[in-house]
Image (cartoon, rainbow, N blue to C red; front, side, top):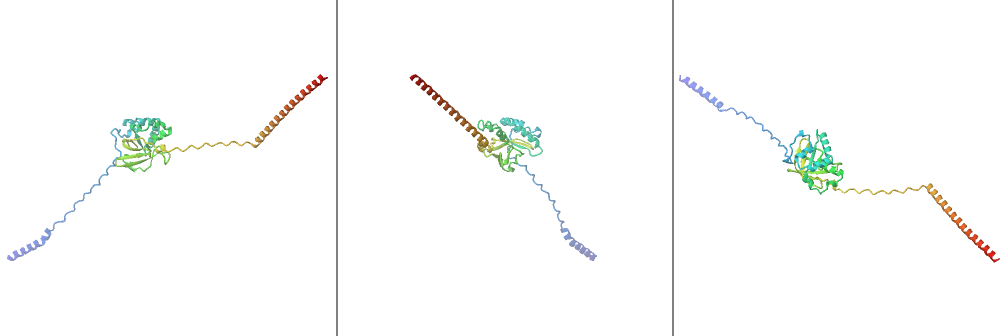
Length: 281
């Protein structure tokens, strides 16, 4: 009996000894799932030109009526009048229709205060071609958003550019400022008047006078003196013959007159001599 108890005791002891390491080993911890960190959203480009408080709401349903937009913005009465008198508004409206599918226009609009800074009578001192070029000089033939002025390459062509080197501006954008230089005037864009996907109108604090207006005009070519036509030799000879004949005829007439006078004198002397002889007899 004791032997059986001892046997079971040793058996339990062996079971306990061999089972202890297995119980001591804890199962490996399952790896925690790694949560994907979402990429930060790209912040929209900050506009370089601020919006004006009185700017009309951008609305593509407004049919991009520039005159109507400028009237709503107020203080652009001079520009509206010049757009009409030069008929540039017709050109701009036609170009907007053809560029709605892409391209667009950018208008740098000086207000009434900017035009008041010009010398009195300046605009009227320009000829018709220069008046139109002055208004066209404020229009870029493509769309520029308020945050993309720093992407322009200088010099920048304008609607007045009639050649690759004429009527251009330089644009400098840094911070929240956009400056325009014409070589004569340095101006600043002070705010957005209107913008949509194809038309942008920005307020500029000065009238952009082109450098081309200050270039000296080339001197007018000297008039060419016309050479006198050479006389024809035959005509010259004929004229000489006529002159010779005239001179000979004149000489002959003078000789005849002289002979007539002498004959009269001799005749008178003869009569006098005859009368004297008769009296003496």
